[in-house]
Image 1 (cartoon, rainbow, N blue to C red):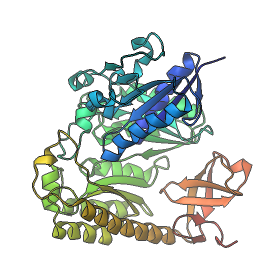
Image 2 (cartoon, rainbow, N blue to C red; image 1 turned 30 degrees about the horizontal axis):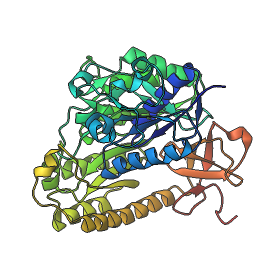
Image 3 (cartoon, rainbow, N blue to C red; image 1 turned 45 degrees about the vertical axis):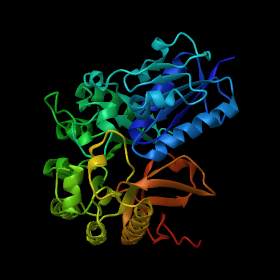
Image 4 (cartoon, rainbow, N blue to C red; image 1 turned 180 degrees about the horizontal axis):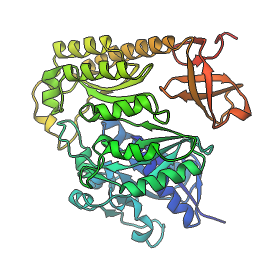
Length: 434
């Protein structure tokens, strides 16, 4: 009987693509992959370190899987493992800690997966990551509908609140020929939407004499029935060439996700971001003007050091006025070894949560308004494989969630849907009361 392995992923889509690659290694070695709630011989936990809760989640998952099988071998990897291996190794039940470089070498580093008295740590210095790149991809489900393709890793930015450069090293990119080959393979395998992901995808190619725009040109030239979505791109890297390509190519999703982090110039300066609130507002206006019905997502952090009440009001006002579609709101949490710890003006934790709630209200209104603006329009919707209470769901090119009556023939197809109603959470081709 084949041994069983289960993987659990915390954090971003980049982590999910890497977990999928690790899982493929287990399959090649004869393991059966099972759900994290199942009894398994090996559990691999791929961690995040963006927030304090992600680290608490890691400890919780270790305790949880030990209840499934007290004798299971537990490996912890990812950004938290790279930054704090000495903390993880103290968690009861953890057998090995693998750094960012070692996560793909589990079978060469370990002779077996038997529990031992002493836990092992395999973590290289972050500097050793700078010349190392492992391409990876993952899919949402088994229907080969959407795939996340990792094209870039690491970051050269020095944002004062962020630990990612400490955990993943400097910006580095996959060879463009390798990206095109993997991308083509995914298209030929039946994936209809491929999301390009990384820590800072807009900075792709800096050290290999190319750039993100030139890569996109090669990808849209690939033959097949597919579309490309950019996971997220820094505002200073979303240039006119990329905007025009999104506007002009049927193979580019009409959707951009752009981190703002704060609408206060003073807070942006303290965060060591590379733009002003005015630049961001002008960029959003340009994108909205050039790409009809574009979906625009925005990241924002509340409660960072130096965010006064006036600074938060600036952020609230800017986001309320901008024609964006939804927000991802993050509450600032102190991260060890970051410059933000030395910035005066700490915001009370309760106040941080209150500010988060206020911006989530803005987000809900933005999404509702955007969805209502779609009524009467036709959207290209990629239908997923699940029959959800007689409905089939999917995302449009501009990232609108759509539900329509289930039809097996629509699975993994891009279908044209005229929107007639919305409840603010989903759009429908007919009245949602029917």
